[in-house]
Image 1 (cartoon, rainbow, N blue to C red):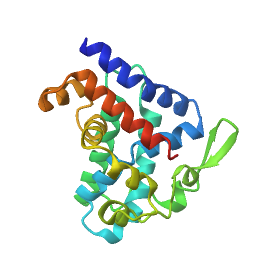
Image 2: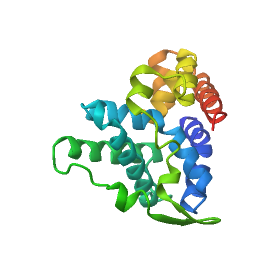
Image 3: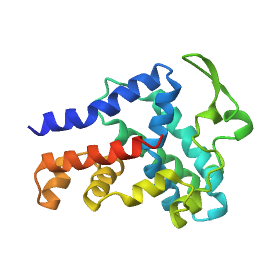
Length: 200
Protein backbone atom coordinates (compact mmCIF):
# COMPACT_ATOMS: atom_id res chain seq x y z
CA UNK A 1 0.00 0.00 0.00
CA UNK A 2 2.81 2.37 0.93
CA UNK A 3 4.52 1.74 -2.40
CA UNK A 4 1.34 2.53 -4.34
CA UNK A 5 0.81 5.77 -2.41
CA UNK A 6 4.40 6.84 -3.06
CA UNK A 7 4.06 6.05 -6.77
CA UNK A 8 0.90 8.14 -7.04
CA UNK A 9 2.52 11.06 -5.22
CA UNK A 10 5.51 10.98 -7.53
CA UNK A 11 3.71 10.63 -10.86
CA UNK A 12 3.06 14.33 -11.54
CA UNK A 13 6.57 15.35 -10.56
CA UNK A 14 8.09 12.53 -12.61
CA UNK A 15 6.23 13.70 -15.72
CA UNK A 16 7.57 17.23 -15.26
CA UNK A 17 11.11 15.92 -14.80
CA UNK A 18 10.88 13.84 -17.98
CA UNK A 19 9.60 16.82 -19.98
CA UNK A 20 12.27 19.11 -18.55
CA UNK A 21 15.06 16.67 -19.36
CA UNK A 22 13.68 16.41 -22.89
CA UNK A 23 14.15 20.18 -23.27
CA UNK A 24 10.71 21.53 -22.36
CA UNK A 25 11.48 25.02 -21.01
CA UNK A 26 8.05 25.46 -19.41
CA UNK A 27 8.56 22.23 -17.50
CA UNK A 28 11.88 23.58 -16.22
CA UNK A 29 10.21 26.78 -15.06
CA UNK A 30 7.50 24.79 -13.28
CA UNK A 31 10.09 22.67 -11.50
CA UNK A 32 12.04 25.74 -10.37
CA UNK A 33 8.79 27.25 -9.11
CA UNK A 34 7.81 24.08 -7.25
CA UNK A 35 11.21 23.82 -5.60
CA UNK A 36 11.52 27.49 -4.58
CA UNK A 37 10.63 26.72 -0.93
CA UNK A 38 13.55 24.27 -0.79
CA UNK A 39 15.88 26.68 -2.60
CA UNK A 40 15.02 29.56 -0.26
CA UNK A 41 15.29 27.37 2.84
CA UNK A 42 18.73 26.14 1.78
CA UNK A 43 19.95 29.68 1.12
CA UNK A 44 18.68 30.91 4.48
CA UNK A 45 20.37 27.97 6.24
CA UNK A 46 23.81 28.28 4.67
CA UNK A 47 24.17 31.92 3.56
CA UNK A 48 24.55 34.23 6.55
CA UNK A 49 25.02 37.55 4.76
CA UNK A 50 21.70 38.74 3.33
CA UNK A 51 23.59 40.90 0.83
CA UNK A 52 24.66 37.67 -0.85
CA UNK A 53 21.14 36.28 -1.19
CA UNK A 54 20.63 37.52 -4.75
CA UNK A 55 23.81 35.86 -5.99
CA UNK A 56 23.07 32.77 -3.93
CA UNK A 57 19.63 32.48 -5.51
CA UNK A 58 21.07 32.62 -9.03
CA UNK A 59 23.69 30.07 -8.05
CA UNK A 60 20.99 27.82 -6.61
CA UNK A 61 18.95 27.90 -9.81
CA UNK A 62 22.02 27.00 -11.84
CA UNK A 63 22.84 24.15 -9.46
CA UNK A 64 19.23 22.98 -9.72
CA UNK A 65 19.35 22.92 -13.52
CA UNK A 66 22.68 21.12 -13.54
CA UNK A 67 21.26 18.55 -11.11
CA UNK A 68 18.23 18.14 -13.35
CA UNK A 69 20.57 17.48 -16.26
CA UNK A 70 22.52 14.88 -14.25
CA UNK A 71 19.50 13.12 -12.72
CA UNK A 72 18.93 9.64 -14.10
CA UNK A 73 15.27 8.78 -14.54
CA UNK A 74 15.99 5.12 -13.81
CA UNK A 75 17.79 5.90 -10.55
CA UNK A 76 16.35 4.40 -7.40
CA UNK A 77 16.14 7.76 -5.65
CA UNK A 78 13.48 10.43 -5.40
CA UNK A 79 14.14 13.48 -7.58
CA UNK A 80 13.50 15.84 -4.66
CA UNK A 81 16.02 13.96 -2.50
CA UNK A 82 18.61 14.19 -5.29
CA UNK A 83 18.00 17.93 -5.70
CA UNK A 84 18.16 18.59 -1.97
CA UNK A 85 21.47 16.74 -1.74
CA UNK A 86 23.02 18.71 -4.61
CA UNK A 87 21.89 22.06 -3.22
CA UNK A 88 23.05 21.19 0.29
CA UNK A 89 26.45 19.98 -0.87
CA UNK A 90 26.98 23.09 -2.98
CA UNK A 91 26.09 25.55 -0.23
CA UNK A 92 28.09 23.65 2.39
CA UNK A 93 31.18 23.98 0.20
CA UNK A 94 30.35 27.60 -0.49
CA UNK A 95 30.05 28.35 3.22
CA UNK A 96 33.28 26.51 4.01
CA UNK A 97 35.09 28.75 1.55
CA UNK A 98 36.10 26.02 -0.88
CA UNK A 99 34.93 28.44 -3.52
CA UNK A 100 33.22 31.80 -3.41
CA UNK A 101 30.83 31.09 -6.23
CA UNK A 102 31.07 28.19 -8.62
CA UNK A 103 28.81 29.80 -11.18
CA UNK A 104 29.68 33.17 -12.67
CA UNK A 105 26.77 35.04 -14.28
CA UNK A 106 28.80 36.21 -17.25
CA UNK A 107 29.83 32.61 -17.95
CA UNK A 108 26.71 30.66 -17.08
CA UNK A 109 23.55 32.76 -16.86
CA UNK A 110 23.87 33.95 -20.46
CA UNK A 111 24.70 30.48 -21.73
CA UNK A 112 22.34 29.26 -24.44
CA UNK A 113 20.53 26.01 -23.70
CA UNK A 114 18.99 24.04 -26.52
CA UNK A 115 15.43 22.86 -26.10
CA UNK A 116 12.07 22.61 -27.76
CA UNK A 117 11.51 25.73 -29.84
CA UNK A 118 15.21 26.58 -30.07
CA UNK A 119 17.84 27.93 -27.72
CA UNK A 120 17.07 29.94 -24.60
CA UNK A 121 19.37 31.81 -22.21
CA UNK A 122 19.80 30.10 -18.87
CA UNK A 123 18.85 33.31 -17.06
CA UNK A 124 15.41 33.17 -18.69
CA UNK A 125 14.74 29.97 -16.79
CA UNK A 126 14.99 31.87 -13.53
CA UNK A 127 11.41 32.84 -12.80
CA UNK A 128 12.36 36.30 -11.56
CA UNK A 129 16.04 37.11 -11.61
CA UNK A 130 15.30 40.37 -9.77
CA UNK A 131 13.61 38.61 -6.87
CA UNK A 132 14.76 39.97 -3.52
CA UNK A 133 15.37 36.59 -1.95
CA UNK A 134 15.97 37.93 1.53
CA UNK A 135 12.67 39.75 1.56
CA UNK A 136 10.87 36.89 -0.14
CA UNK A 137 11.88 34.51 2.61
CA UNK A 138 12.22 36.72 5.68
CA UNK A 139 9.78 39.59 5.07
CA UNK A 140 7.23 37.82 2.87
CA UNK A 141 6.82 40.73 0.46
CA UNK A 142 3.41 41.03 -1.16
CA UNK A 143 4.85 40.96 -4.67
CA UNK A 144 6.12 37.41 -4.19
CA UNK A 145 3.15 35.34 -5.34
CA UNK A 146 4.65 32.03 -4.34
CA UNK A 147 5.36 33.12 -0.78
CA UNK A 148 1.92 34.66 -0.41
CA UNK A 149 0.10 31.53 -1.48
CA UNK A 150 2.45 29.26 0.42
CA UNK A 151 1.91 31.18 3.67
CA UNK A 152 -1.88 30.91 3.26
CA UNK A 153 -1.85 27.13 2.98
CA UNK A 154 -3.66 25.31 5.80
CA UNK A 155 -1.20 23.86 8.35
CA UNK A 156 -1.59 20.27 7.18
CA UNK A 157 -1.12 21.16 3.49
CA UNK A 158 1.94 23.24 4.32
CA UNK A 159 3.40 20.44 6.45
CA UNK A 160 2.82 17.86 3.71
CA UNK A 161 4.38 20.07 1.03
CA UNK A 162 7.42 20.87 3.19
CA UNK A 163 7.94 17.23 4.11
CA UNK A 164 7.65 15.94 0.56
CA UNK A 165 10.06 18.49 -0.93
CA UNK A 166 12.41 19.30 1.93
CA UNK A 167 12.76 16.16 3.98
CA UNK A 168 12.37 12.46 3.31
CA UNK A 169 9.81 12.52 0.53
CA UNK A 170 7.74 9.88 2.33
CA UNK A 171 4.29 11.16 3.28
CA UNK A 172 3.47 7.87 5.00
CA UNK A 173 6.05 8.64 7.69
CA UNK A 174 4.64 12.13 8.18
CA UNK A 175 1.14 10.67 8.46
CA UNK A 176 2.35 8.38 11.25
CA UNK A 177 3.91 11.33 13.08
CA UNK A 178 0.70 13.33 12.75
CA UNK A 179 -1.49 10.37 13.66
CA UNK A 180 -3.62 10.54 10.51
CA UNK A 181 -4.39 8.23 7.59
CA UNK A 182 -1.70 8.31 4.84
CA UNK A 183 -4.36 9.04 2.22
CA UNK A 184 -5.34 12.19 4.13
CA UNK A 185 -1.74 13.42 4.05
CA UNK A 186 -1.50 12.57 0.35
CA UNK A 187 -4.61 14.65 -0.37
CA UNK A 188 -3.17 17.52 1.65
CA UNK A 189 0.04 17.46 -0.40
CA UNK A 190 -1.83 17.33 -3.70
CA UNK A 191 -4.08 20.22 -2.70
CA UNK A 192 -1.04 22.31 -1.76
CA UNK A 193 0.73 21.52 -5.03
CA UNK A 194 -2.37 22.44 -7.08
CA UNK A 195 -2.74 25.77 -5.29
CA UNK A 196 0.90 26.69 -5.85
CA UNK A 197 0.89 25.52 -9.45
CA UNK A 198 -2.06 27.80 -10.30
CA UNK A 199 0.16 30.84 -9.77
CA UNK A 200 2.70 30.01 -12.48
